[in-house]
Length: 380
Image 1 (cartoon, rainbow, N blue to C red):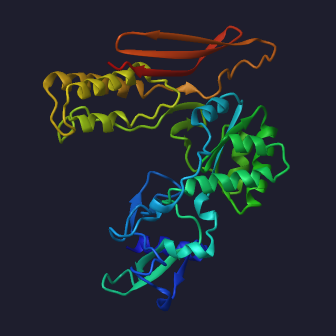
Image 2 (tube, rainbow, N blue to C red; image 1 turned 90 degrees about the vertical axis):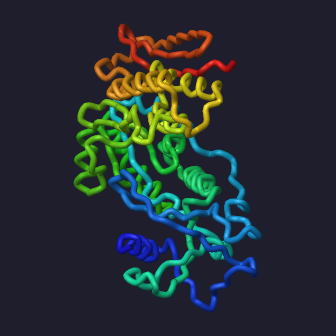
C-alpha cells in the first residue's frame, strides 16, 4: 500500500496526473467520464521495479464500451527489432539508452482527460477511507493508441530537428529505447551529447546510458546517468559491457513442472526464449514441431501429456537450457578493421517434410560470422 501510494503521489508531483474535485465527479449515466481499474506489478528492472497498470480495456458496465473499444490504434510506426540489432552489431562502440517514462511525456488534451479517471484511497493506511479521484494529464500506457501517439510524437519532433544524428535516432528507436553506436569513441561521445540535447527539447530525458566505450562509461557515471548493471538488458537480450558479447536473458525452464506437463505449459515455457536473430533455431524448431504435433492430436490445453510426449519435451528443455548459454560477439568483426576487404553475404537454405529454414553469414576477408536465421514448421 505504501509503495503504491508513493507511486501515485510521485505521478501527481511530476504533473502526470491531477486530482478531480468532488463536485466534478460524474459516475455512470452521463457519458462524460470513465474510471480505470488499476493494479500493481513487479518487474525485473533496475529503473522501474514497481509499476501501476491501468486497464483501459475494462468496461464499467455491459452498456458502456471501454476506452480501448473507442480508440483508433493508428498505423504501426515501431521500427523492426531485428534490423536495429543487426545495425547495432556493425559499430565498434555500441550505445544504448532509454527514454524515461516515455509515454508519460505525451500530453493528453484537456477535453479527453475525464475518460482516464481512477480512484485511490485518501488514506492508504485505512482501507475504509474515502476515495480521491484522479485523472491523467498525459497518455496512459494501457491505452491501445498509446504506442502510435508516442511514436508519432517522437517522429514529428525528430523531423523538426536539423541535426545529422536525428535520422539515426529515428531508425534505431524501439518504443522507449535507442540502440546505436559509432566507429570511434569521439563519435559515441558526440552522439551522447547531441541525442540528449535533441530529446530534451521535447522534455524527454535519456537515461540508463550504457556503452563498451570507456570514455562514454566514465562520462555517464560522472553524471550519474549510467545503467547500474554490468550486463545490460538490450531489447530483450543481455549485453555484457566488459566482454562486448550478447547472450540470452536467463529464464529457467522446468521440464517436469509441478502442475504437470500440458500443451499450455509447453507453449508458455517454449515462448520464454526470446531469440530475434534465430541463434537457437536448431533447437527452438523442435519446440515448434512438438506444439504442431499436439495440435494435430487434438490434445486439450490442460490435458496431461502421455509419456512419449513428456520425454520429447524433457529432451527439448535440456537442449534449450544448454543452448541458452551461447554468447556471440556484439561486433561482427571486432579484431579486423581493414576497410579494403570485401564483405559478402552467404545464405543457406534447406527443407524437410517437417520444417524448413535459412541462415545468413557475413564474410569479411578470411573471417565469417553469423548474421541471422529463420525456421518454420511445415503445415500438413
